[in-house]
Image (cartoon, rainbow, N blue to C red; front, side):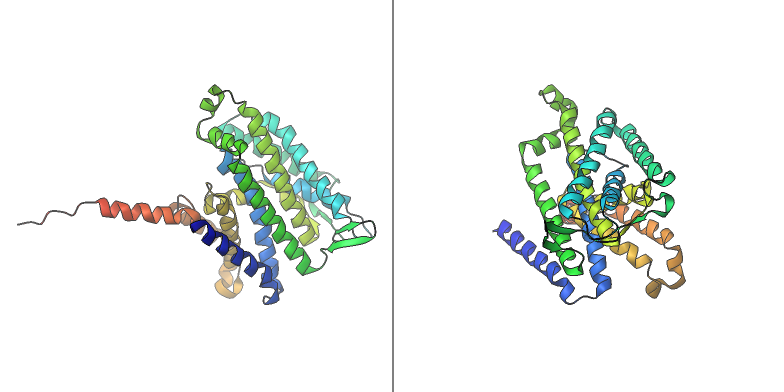
Length: 334
């Protein structure tokens, strides 16, 4: 009964999001697309952080490499074929994940964090300091790609509503894929590695292989988000690979709750809306020009008040309620 209720609520929520462009203006449509792309990006990192126990500070490399690949492969005249651009961009990010993962996964803890950060910064400076991707100025994607076979256009995502629905479909497919993956034997092995890797080795599991596969899958999923971001803005620059981008998506996972897939989506939505709030001159006036300070203070407060993230609030309230119930009343004084 509970599962049916959750499925019904999920279906209603998806329908409401799908129909939002019918009633919302361009600003809110663009904001929703941005939230969905970052949700997909956060889901890819959730596989590492919440699923495998690997905290990476270089996840933006996959995001930026796929965005650059799709933009570099797109023609300067006429729309490119998404059947070609998307797989090539995702494969590029997965190749980078495989090469760097083989080296970085041999480290643990803070060393793994620093190694992933170092690899991401190497990729950042390749695009920042060379002419491969236009240097610091970045490059433009002049035409949005189309899903087509020959001359038959199956889906024209140059139009706002088809692109909106396509982004929503990608988010749902990735969420469903990860939900099935984490319930499989492979997902159970990743959970075991996160809980106690040494015990998994003693049980006969080659933990490095499992972690590498998870790392490559996460890189590919992050690559999908990067392609969508490039198509949305029609422009990419080296800041997509910067460590700030990796830190931002890591904050999304932490804020939403690293132990749940829904946490990545909730965290991405919450952090994006929080940014929009503190950048709004209509609401905050001149303070909006210095939005980083109140935004940082708000993040610190939220993480301190919600150690298990937004999705962990019900559990936190239940624990608090049970603690109050279990506390015996003080004896009355005579």
